[in-house]
Image 1 (cartoon, rainbow, N blue to C red):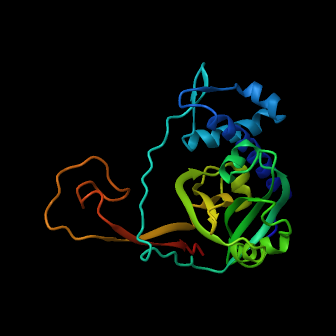
Image 2: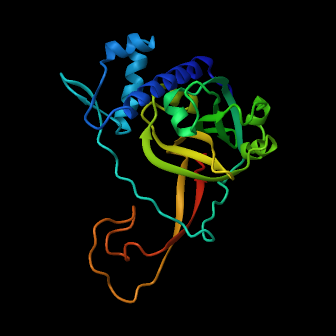
Image 3: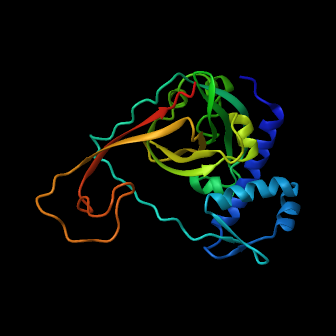
Length: 280
Protein backbone atom coordinates (compact mmCIF):
# COMPACT_ATOMS: atom_id res chain seq x y z
CA UNK A 1 0.00 0.00 0.00
CA UNK A 2 1.33 3.46 -0.97
CA UNK A 3 1.06 6.12 1.72
CA UNK A 4 -0.28 9.49 0.54
CA UNK A 5 2.32 12.07 1.70
CA UNK A 6 -0.24 14.88 1.89
CA UNK A 7 -2.65 12.78 3.95
CA UNK A 8 0.14 11.68 6.27
CA UNK A 9 1.32 15.29 6.73
CA UNK A 10 -2.19 16.52 7.53
CA UNK A 11 -2.62 13.70 10.05
CA UNK A 12 0.63 14.50 11.87
CA UNK A 13 -0.11 18.25 11.98
CA UNK A 14 -3.55 17.56 13.45
CA UNK A 15 -1.95 15.25 16.00
CA UNK A 16 0.35 18.01 17.23
CA UNK A 17 -2.60 20.41 17.52
CA UNK A 18 -4.62 17.74 19.36
CA UNK A 19 -1.82 17.23 21.90
CA UNK A 20 -1.56 20.97 22.53
CA UNK A 21 -5.31 21.27 23.20
CA UNK A 22 -5.23 18.18 25.44
CA UNK A 23 -2.58 19.90 27.55
CA UNK A 24 -4.95 22.85 27.98
CA UNK A 25 -7.80 20.51 28.94
CA UNK A 26 -5.76 18.56 31.48
CA UNK A 27 -4.62 21.81 33.15
CA UNK A 28 -8.26 22.82 33.74
CA UNK A 29 -11.32 21.52 35.58
CA UNK A 30 -14.65 20.45 34.06
CA UNK A 31 -16.62 23.53 33.03
CA UNK A 32 -13.55 25.75 32.59
CA UNK A 33 -13.22 27.62 29.30
CA UNK A 34 -10.33 27.15 26.88
CA UNK A 35 -9.05 29.95 24.60
CA UNK A 36 -11.02 30.90 21.50
CA UNK A 37 -10.33 29.41 18.08
CA UNK A 38 -8.77 32.69 16.96
CA UNK A 39 -6.39 32.71 19.93
CA UNK A 40 -5.48 29.04 19.52
CA UNK A 41 -4.78 29.47 15.80
CA UNK A 42 -2.39 32.32 16.59
CA UNK A 43 -0.70 30.52 19.49
CA UNK A 44 -0.26 27.23 17.61
CA UNK A 45 0.48 28.73 14.19
CA UNK A 46 -2.16 26.70 12.34
CA UNK A 47 -5.09 27.46 10.08
CA UNK A 48 -8.71 27.59 11.28
CA UNK A 49 -9.67 24.34 9.41
CA UNK A 50 -6.77 22.43 10.99
CA UNK A 51 -7.69 23.66 14.45
CA UNK A 52 -11.38 22.91 13.98
CA UNK A 53 -10.62 19.35 12.86
CA UNK A 54 -8.74 18.74 16.11
CA UNK A 55 -11.42 20.45 18.22
CA UNK A 56 -14.17 18.49 16.46
CA UNK A 57 -12.41 15.24 17.34
CA UNK A 58 -12.18 16.23 21.02
CA UNK A 59 -15.84 17.26 21.05
CA UNK A 60 -16.86 13.88 19.59
CA UNK A 61 -14.61 12.16 22.15
CA UNK A 62 -16.49 13.95 24.93
CA UNK A 63 -13.51 15.97 26.17
CA UNK A 64 -14.72 19.40 25.01
CA UNK A 65 -18.15 21.05 24.85
CA UNK A 66 -19.06 23.83 22.40
CA UNK A 67 -21.66 26.36 23.50
CA UNK A 68 -22.97 28.67 20.79
CA UNK A 69 -22.05 32.27 21.48
CA UNK A 70 -20.04 31.39 24.60
CA UNK A 71 -17.04 29.35 23.48
CA UNK A 72 -15.48 25.99 24.29
CA UNK A 73 -15.39 24.36 27.70
CA UNK A 74 -13.82 21.32 29.35
CA UNK A 75 -16.42 18.53 29.45
CA UNK A 76 -17.51 16.66 32.56
CA UNK A 77 -15.38 13.71 33.56
CA UNK A 78 -16.29 10.35 32.02
CA UNK A 79 -17.56 7.43 34.04
CA UNK A 80 -15.13 4.52 33.90
CA UNK A 81 -15.39 0.93 35.09
CA UNK A 82 -12.34 -1.24 35.63
CA UNK A 83 -12.48 -5.02 35.48
CA UNK A 84 -9.70 -6.47 37.63
CA UNK A 85 -8.61 -9.88 36.31
CA UNK A 86 -7.31 -12.72 38.40
CA UNK A 87 -3.56 -12.82 37.83
CA UNK A 88 -3.68 -16.40 36.56
CA UNK A 89 -6.89 -16.10 34.53
CA UNK A 90 -6.08 -13.11 32.35
CA UNK A 91 -4.91 -13.93 28.84
CA UNK A 92 -4.48 -11.82 25.72
CA UNK A 93 -4.71 -14.01 22.61
CA UNK A 94 -3.13 -12.78 19.40
CA UNK A 95 -5.45 -10.97 17.01
CA UNK A 96 -6.13 -12.77 13.75
CA UNK A 97 -4.35 -12.01 10.47
CA UNK A 98 -0.75 -11.18 9.52
CA UNK A 99 0.19 -7.88 11.19
CA UNK A 100 2.85 -5.55 9.76
CA UNK A 101 3.85 -1.94 10.39
CA UNK A 102 4.61 1.03 8.12
CA UNK A 103 6.51 3.95 9.69
CA UNK A 104 4.93 7.37 9.13
CA UNK A 105 7.24 9.43 11.35
CA UNK A 106 10.10 8.96 13.81
CA UNK A 107 11.35 12.01 15.67
CA UNK A 108 13.19 12.78 18.90
CA UNK A 109 11.63 15.82 20.59
CA UNK A 110 10.88 17.27 24.04
CA UNK A 111 8.17 15.38 25.91
CA UNK A 112 6.07 18.45 26.70
CA UNK A 113 3.93 18.84 29.81
CA UNK A 114 1.21 16.31 29.02
CA UNK A 115 3.33 13.38 27.80
CA UNK A 116 5.97 14.20 30.42
CA UNK A 117 3.39 13.73 33.18
CA UNK A 118 2.34 10.35 31.79
CA UNK A 119 5.92 9.10 31.42
CA UNK A 120 7.10 10.78 34.65
CA UNK A 121 9.84 12.74 32.92
CA UNK A 122 10.59 16.45 32.66
CA UNK A 123 8.73 18.35 29.90
CA UNK A 124 12.18 19.12 28.47
CA UNK A 125 13.29 15.47 28.49
CA UNK A 126 13.65 13.93 25.04
CA UNK A 127 11.28 11.21 23.87
CA UNK A 128 11.01 9.15 20.71
CA UNK A 129 7.75 10.05 18.99
CA UNK A 130 6.63 7.36 16.57
CA UNK A 131 3.65 7.44 14.21
CA UNK A 132 3.07 4.21 12.36
CA UNK A 133 0.40 2.55 10.28
CA UNK A 134 -0.60 -0.98 11.27
CA UNK A 135 -1.72 -3.32 8.50
CA UNK A 136 -3.34 -6.74 8.54
CA UNK A 137 -2.80 -8.91 5.48
CA UNK A 138 -1.67 -5.71 3.71
CA UNK A 139 -4.80 -3.66 4.52
CA UNK A 140 -4.57 -0.62 6.85
CA UNK A 141 -6.22 -1.25 10.22
CA UNK A 142 -4.85 1.25 12.73
CA UNK A 143 -2.76 4.38 13.31
CA UNK A 144 -0.48 4.33 16.34
CA UNK A 145 1.13 7.32 18.08
CA UNK A 146 3.88 6.01 20.38
CA UNK A 147 5.94 7.95 22.95
CA UNK A 148 9.04 6.35 24.54
CA UNK A 149 11.63 8.10 26.77
CA UNK A 150 14.69 8.49 24.55
CA UNK A 151 17.05 7.78 27.47
CA UNK A 152 15.63 4.25 27.79
CA UNK A 153 16.24 3.27 24.16
CA UNK A 154 18.62 5.82 22.60
CA UNK A 155 19.43 3.57 19.64
CA UNK A 156 15.86 2.70 18.62
CA UNK A 157 15.77 2.43 14.82
CA UNK A 158 13.15 2.72 12.11
CA UNK A 159 13.79 -0.92 11.14
CA UNK A 160 12.88 -2.04 14.67
CA UNK A 161 9.67 -0.06 14.49
CA UNK A 162 8.64 -1.67 11.21
CA UNK A 163 9.85 -5.23 11.76
CA UNK A 164 9.06 -7.68 14.56
CA UNK A 165 7.64 -7.06 18.02
CA UNK A 166 8.31 -3.63 19.57
CA UNK A 167 8.51 -5.00 23.12
CA UNK A 168 11.06 -7.59 22.04
CA UNK A 169 13.14 -4.81 20.49
CA UNK A 170 12.85 -2.78 23.70
CA UNK A 171 14.09 -5.81 25.62
CA UNK A 172 17.15 -5.71 23.38
CA UNK A 173 17.74 -2.17 24.67
CA UNK A 174 17.41 -3.38 28.27
CA UNK A 175 13.76 -2.33 28.72
CA UNK A 176 11.63 -5.24 29.95
CA UNK A 177 7.90 -4.46 30.00
CA UNK A 178 5.81 -5.85 32.83
CA UNK A 179 2.27 -4.44 32.81
CA UNK A 180 0.05 -1.90 31.08
CA UNK A 181 -3.19 -0.06 31.75
CA UNK A 182 -5.27 0.35 28.60
CA UNK A 183 -8.58 2.09 27.94
CA UNK A 184 -10.86 1.61 24.92
CA UNK A 185 -13.66 3.90 23.77
CA UNK A 186 -15.58 4.62 20.56
CA UNK A 187 -14.83 7.60 18.35
CA UNK A 188 -14.97 8.64 14.69
CA UNK A 189 -12.18 9.35 12.22
CA UNK A 190 -11.19 12.78 10.93
CA UNK A 191 -10.71 13.35 7.20
CA UNK A 192 -6.92 13.02 7.52
CA UNK A 193 -7.17 9.79 9.53
CA UNK A 194 -9.72 8.40 7.09
CA UNK A 195 -7.42 9.17 4.15
CA UNK A 196 -4.56 7.23 5.75
CA UNK A 197 -6.79 4.28 6.68
CA UNK A 198 -8.68 4.29 3.37
CA UNK A 199 -12.16 4.95 4.77
CA UNK A 200 -14.53 7.98 4.69
CA UNK A 201 -14.42 10.83 7.18
CA UNK A 202 -16.52 10.18 10.35
CA UNK A 203 -16.17 6.42 9.98
CA UNK A 204 -16.47 4.64 13.36
CA UNK A 205 -13.26 3.76 15.16
CA UNK A 206 -11.96 2.46 18.48
CA UNK A 207 -9.59 4.69 20.44
CA UNK A 208 -7.01 2.81 22.54
CA UNK A 209 -4.83 4.55 25.12
CA UNK A 210 -2.13 2.58 26.91
CA UNK A 211 0.53 3.33 29.52
CA UNK A 212 3.13 0.57 29.82
CA UNK A 213 5.51 0.03 32.74
CA UNK A 214 8.66 -2.06 33.05
CA UNK A 215 9.67 -4.54 35.75
CA UNK A 216 10.93 -1.61 37.85
CA UNK A 217 7.49 0.09 37.64
CA UNK A 218 8.83 2.88 35.40
CA UNK A 219 6.52 4.18 32.66
CA UNK A 220 8.27 3.22 29.43
CA UNK A 221 5.62 3.77 26.75
CA UNK A 222 2.56 5.94 26.23
CA UNK A 223 0.56 5.18 23.11
CA UNK A 224 -2.81 6.08 21.67
CA UNK A 225 -4.14 4.28 18.63
CA UNK A 226 -7.12 4.47 16.30
CA UNK A 227 -8.51 1.18 14.97
CA UNK A 228 -11.01 0.98 12.13
CA UNK A 229 -14.43 0.17 13.55
CA UNK A 230 -15.50 -1.66 10.38
CA UNK A 231 -12.60 -4.12 10.53
CA UNK A 232 -11.67 -4.57 14.18
CA UNK A 233 -13.63 -5.67 17.24
CA UNK A 234 -12.84 -6.81 20.78
CA UNK A 235 -14.24 -10.08 22.12
CA UNK A 236 -14.17 -10.76 25.89
CA UNK A 237 -14.93 -14.05 27.59
CA UNK A 238 -16.23 -13.56 31.15
CA UNK A 239 -16.43 -16.27 33.84
CA UNK A 240 -18.92 -15.12 36.48
CA UNK A 241 -18.83 -16.65 39.94
CA UNK A 242 -21.97 -18.69 40.85
CA UNK A 243 -24.16 -17.14 43.51
CA UNK A 244 -26.01 -19.00 46.32
CA UNK A 245 -28.74 -16.37 46.66
CA UNK A 246 -29.86 -13.18 44.88
CA UNK A 247 -28.01 -10.16 46.27
CA UNK A 248 -29.53 -6.97 47.61
CA UNK A 249 -29.62 -4.21 44.96
CA UNK A 250 -26.52 -2.04 44.90
CA UNK A 251 -25.53 0.92 42.81
CA UNK A 252 -23.36 0.51 39.73
CA UNK A 253 -22.76 -2.32 37.29
CA UNK A 254 -20.12 -3.73 34.99
CA UNK A 255 -20.25 -2.51 31.38
CA UNK A 256 -22.19 -4.80 29.07
CA UNK A 257 -23.74 -6.74 31.95
CA UNK A 258 -27.21 -5.62 33.16
CA UNK A 259 -27.48 -4.68 36.86
CA UNK A 260 -28.49 -7.54 39.21
CA UNK A 261 -27.15 -10.23 36.85
CA UNK A 262 -24.53 -11.05 39.47
CA UNK A 263 -23.29 -9.69 42.77
CA UNK A 264 -21.30 -6.48 42.44
CA UNK A 265 -17.81 -7.04 43.74
CA UNK A 266 -17.64 -10.78 43.05
CA UNK A 267 -14.69 -12.04 40.99
CA UNK A 268 -14.88 -11.76 37.23
CA UNK A 269 -12.21 -13.57 35.23
CA UNK A 270 -11.89 -12.93 31.55
CA UNK A 271 -9.83 -13.28 28.42
CA UNK A 272 -9.75 -10.79 25.59
CA UNK A 273 -8.96 -11.20 21.91
CA UNK A 274 -8.87 -8.87 18.94
CA UNK A 275 -10.75 -10.01 15.85
CA UNK A 276 -10.16 -8.58 12.38
CA UNK A 277 -13.24 -8.70 10.15
CA UNK A 278 -12.64 -9.89 6.58
CA UNK A 279 -14.52 -7.50 4.30
CA UNK A 280 -13.46 -9.11 1.03
